[in-house]
Length: 332
Ligand code: CO
Ligand code: ZN
Image 1 (tube, rainbow, N blue to C red):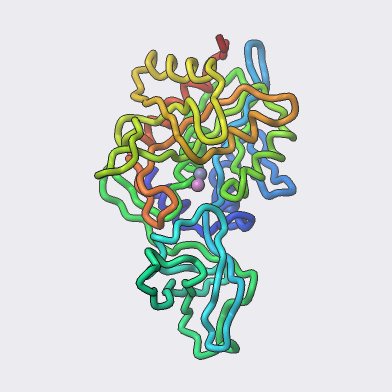
Image 2: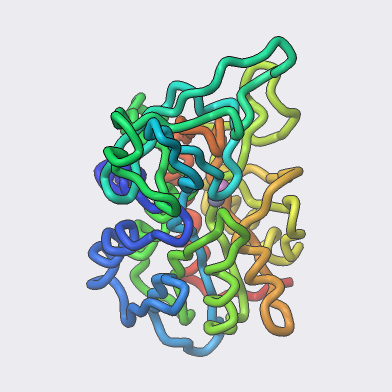
């Protein structure tokens, strides 16, 4: 899966501008699917299978968008001020590089700090594109950029700017490839605008009207020095979400996922994330409500330009999803 992962995580696709990622995904899934469509918000909706006896209509969702920045002002000297797209942390930015959608690159730098500033706030940061002045600046107000960083392959551990959530996009594509027979009508949704509030999955869930929903996304870990107290770590398997900052998984879905992993001897962990939420929240709250769960890929340094996942967790996530979707489901 590594070549596929590299292609996906190095693609440029901030929220609302997922076109390049969508084209990559479309190429991978078209011959694996029964139907492929794109809706008004840019979600790529891929159907596989037709509902038969004991089958459900199931929506799976992994978001294509990544966090980024948007230019708000360009001064006479050609320095660009910006605001954020999604949950960007100011601590990870200074000295980093950005790539704008038009291909222009720049360096993130900051004003001199006063003794009372603990860290650069966004107001004290700017992007230097090497321009001699405003007329020479290749970027205009409203242009978006992402944090430029190639993927790093450390063997079992992979590092990239957008593991959140391209690693799950890769997991869904690989699951689609592995899945031979299913009694279910499956909708693999490669969603848009998750990082600005699960907007793509909101409209996709309404259109699909599923019996069951599963989001696939990254989650934080508690396995770094003096990090948060959280019982999820890299390398111990994908995590079955019990609760996050915006959703309580349906306990029957949690049980089904955990029992299936145990029966198939696939390692898994149980996840409680205190802040943040996923597309599962949007699916759960659509129309009259939907039972949902979420399979998470443990990820260190989420929302930094160097997000780290464990390759075995990724492969186990594919195996678990493939088993989950191959058999009839009786939630209890
Ligand atoms: Co995110
Ligand atoms: Zn995410």
